[in-house]
Image 1 (cartoon, rainbow, N blue to C red):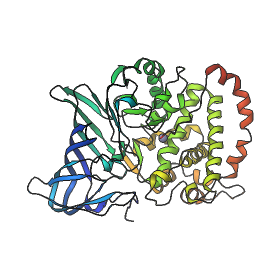
Image 2: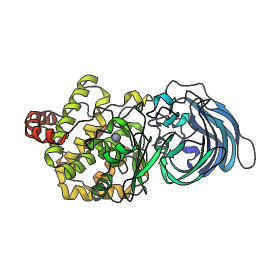
Image 3: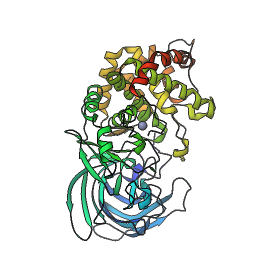
Length: 483
Ligand SMILES: [Zn+2]
């Protein structure tokens, strides 16, 4: 069956991007980037190549040998414009020169008075789900992964940080920061921030960027991150991204956290002065495996990113904070799940694990894939026992590392590795255990199985059991939206 991502103009039959070398000049006065990008393709391309774009001012397109013709289709409200590059003759590389728009959806430009320090402007990107196309023309589908290098030119007094490995800094009229991302990423994990940033080491693999006014508090708050990585590795396998740093953004960052590889972007509201915002960091760290290493092939398969991450988060929470705390998180998640499903309607296609083919993926995203996905994986664990399921987790991560997969491909793998899940998992009350029910559950089952709703009855008991512990540890739930 031909693969199609409804949120992208990508046509995989034309070829795939393999690597991009960026030169990015960041201009705060016009709130734009001037970019020269050299693209390498996995295979030589003949004829057309369709790329996603949003309000890109394209100035030049060429291969090694000749100019390419191009045409932008009319703008779609959600998808932006399809950029048709024409005239490839078996070429494996091409170069685009362009300028981004001040309205680029992935870029947030802040004036100095919107920062903590109040003296310098700030810029950050947020590409998930389909906004990388407003920074550079690309196959903006999580099914396509590429490596990259970047030279980022910023005003002398500012610092650039990317979700990539920093190589060197060159001083001059502008300061140029050199980065490389040797592990292939989907476009939504491209990330950049520029501002008056300072850096503090936290551990052998961990550190934190923040404005100078925030760095002390931030470094104290997240000092225990190395411990979390060690625990996450026990569950999910080796951490394959090199460093794991954090970047604390100004307060206008719209999410709790964003799992950009090697460099999680964080809200400053996570700095509580209590080291109490544990679930946020645990969630973003788990994404280094579930989401970043093994990625949903389309946003319809979003539960493969978020359900797995929420499941891993509960397992790491159990190790670091104990079973009671994990149970409290689960009870909270169950309540949330029911509340969201009641809001969107129990019969809404939004309540399926495999989401319908929508192109407005941002407004379609709810927490349902997080919680319903997590509970499904828990059912799988209960069916085969924790020991066997943990072996499965490590094999899943190793088998699909740096790959993107669909729900259907996941089910094929699950069936090959843990066939008894398909006999034992009873996701619909009073149904006979039978092969096929799990597949239907993942692909088309709407609403919430009654068995989850029964478990919610125990919530008040869990709350009262944990009340004293919560008070003594200043335990706080995140009210911010975690990606
Ligand atoms: Zn997440």
